[in-house]
Length: 403
Image (cartoon, rainbow, N blue to C red):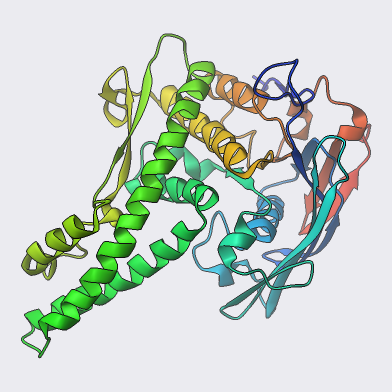
């Protein structure tokens, strides 16, 4: 049985207050120049302002194009921890140049060029030819939200994925949180090494351990406060999104479960009291590296009671809530990157996906192996553009051109 088309009911964006409200500020990617990102050797893409369908067979570079957009906006990848993986095999440098435009009603548009490049282990970023004050300031200028198949484990997988979600939100609410998290991670690793040396009867003074624990306490408490604020902002948006995406009658709640403390003195005492045990553990038993976002449906943990369809709906609700939370923090509509929308088109997933996409107010980029399934009633021809990706080459298609 053939799959039914996905009808994306995307209309003119409206403000949260409803049809009578003002149109929210929009962020548009107007041009993208890609050089040597995975199997995309060269691409010059001029997207449409609303919907961009990136079509082709698997392994030809569709996801790499989305990854290039994400890289230009954030200096990061949504599917690789080692940034060197973005560099095309046999090349030394990968670079992406993006022109972003913010439109604020009747005010003149604000345009900027963001460049991100990798050479060896070095990542360099520029905004209008200048180095930004920090990577955090670069990553928050042009917000993007990515949804890809691996994120279906967001509600079923380890807590690390949910911590990453909270850290993305915290970055927009308080850019200093990224620096606190980096300093905490370095201090935690150093403390663990000192404890292991002490356990091997090497000469280690209490002052050295206390110095690293002080850093862990100060920066760990800041991370805890930032994540707690992120959950406070995310919670109402998540409940609202879940009510629209999931089956009616279900009640969702989200709770921050801190592994550390927002109080520096309490963190100091906890770390000092666990030194002996931590020396024999892979990592410390106390601290924000053990945080989690606990999700419950009707008062029961989702990992225990949720069906496969409910997990999918909840994951999509988390992405919709992430988008809304970033919108509120940054003041513009994030760009949505949606990877592999035509896989596993079972009825539950399709319905949840359609509802999720119906909440999208900004520019959308989606990849698919089934271009014929993507129909967009209510979207003007000028507001949609389709691209074919084959062997790393990106070719724009005319509206009437058959796949």
